[in-house]
Length: 539
Image (cartoon, rainbow, N blue to C red; front, side, top):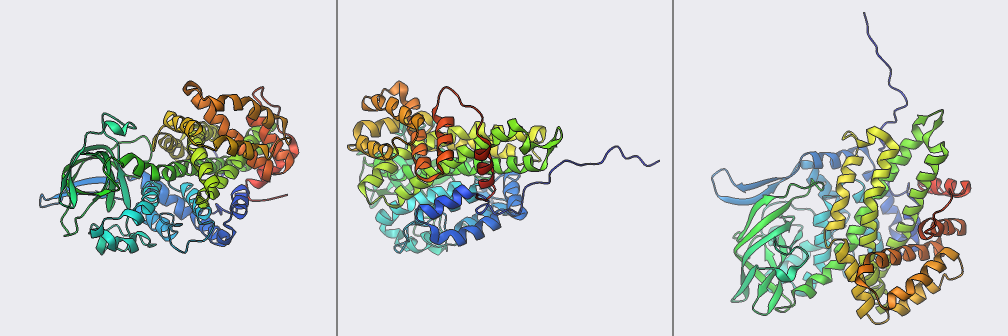
């Protein structure tokens, strides 16, 4: 007898072979609006390539085959290297070829380069996030090194700005492309880097470092920026993997971290055994040097979480369009349609805000734009990275049980989400940074009054929220830090929506996000417009 228990139907095939850029109208509009229209054609080509089944499979393979620590070679010689799956290297090649690690730092960089680079970052985040760690740190460290690279390493300038990925274990001067990592935190301190115990003793034109790092990010990097205690206080040091004479530096990898997510990326513990380091800046100036990079890495955390949210939503929306339940496609069921529309609305506001923030970074030579970036970068990192975890969980619910199974990409996105909230300063650290700007930066209240006053009168929910927040800003209370930071972020998003979105969509955003009394379902025309834009269409 021939047994056939059932046929498989009403099961959508996985989402692949879509253009990640052209299918996201909010992203497309933000790129055109904020100064990177010149990159739209290239972004479309990147979006097409990254949306293929082959690229998405590389992301999966890199995570199910995590890196392996190689402490010794077969002869017993100390190696301190990391072996990666080929998928990791292919993903890194793409990131470097697309200049995500150094775009904006060339002398002839175009206006809008920061915006274009932010878009490329968001697109890559939708495929694989672990590879973005070395990219972010290299991007953040490059402008500092352009000003302060130690003299023995001046031949690094060219490979730092190349579009090549070179994973060979060799001195930096012999490589076609370079990556820079960071070593800041220690067991006893975490974010409290002033409690670091790693010591640095001056020895000629360099220093000898003895100590450890609890998180030594991307240990295969060609050099790390390391915080250590010198005679003059906590200082920042350039610690290369290979010394100028070609010898290995005294950095010992103890183990790789076994992490919840971010599985493709190697995070290690390391010890410095008289490792050679070159001082960047002055002794005792380490925190200020690191803060030069902190804003850049924190902005990338927000961009990365946003990219993960966008991918999770794309998977959910695609499933809802192709899955039937109770006689209708899921997307046509009233309650599901309202849920999906609200998710799309949230992404609209985030996209508009993050790319306004990218433009502020691009124009940071202007004092007002620099202050805008200084205030809103930690606010964005706090709010977007926190929002990502429940957002991906909601996307899982759209798919039901299959969304919770490892055959689907959503579990990997869910595990990936918390790292951006923790890395480069957790939520409370971001909120304290926002309060610091409010208390100590002159002109910040005038900046906010101008930013939010420009849209006054367009929406009553926005006006009420801004009016209620102002007294808290004049004398910010630390215990209210989270509420203040969240509200600043929401008002920042709302201001961008009121400026650039259609009036019905902007008002819907303000009602949903700023009216604490709750809101009724979105009007059908707004739902239609949001879901159309979420697939690349426009009315």
